[in-house]
Length: 246
Image (cartoon, rainbow, N blue to C red; front, side, top):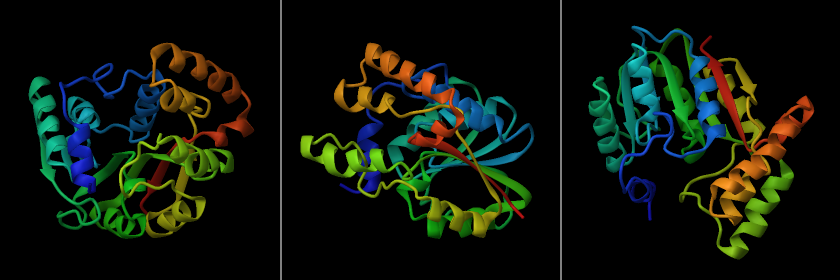
């Protein structure tokens, strides 16, 4: 199964957007998206590229806040969902099936680029020059991503989960390393990293308890307590990257 087929299969089923934004009833993911979107600043009247738009929650959110949104995804089913969600919200989103490593837009087309869990599904070495190319001078790119920096999580991901057949990733998914992020920053521009939510114990609910609501709440409480200690925040499997074009 290739990437497009994988995400087409994930897009099956009715539209379901938690608080109108994320397609998972997870408060942590919702808050992370709100925080990441806030880093873009005022998007009203700005040209924004939603890279790897998925089912379109972020695209519609940005459009409802006055942005001129172009949304791309490798999955035709995701693009169909994005268009349907935009129609339901009476906003315009220019959604197209497109390879995020080779976006077919002219140079300096966008003021902002946004992405939710996309860079670790593509070749970031190929994507970074394209992000820089399509951004206008002074533009900004914000991404919610996973992290390969926690050796304990990487051990469970690579050695424990496969034994139980619990890996849920797509064919090309990989955790981003600090080296890869810094290399992307060297291409696009200075990068800042944020940890507004700690996602560590929370992963146990996803992999071992079928993401049951009680399990999410139980393990998220541990993460929220751990987040109070700033050095521990970098244990999180999820973080936010903010690039500013030089």
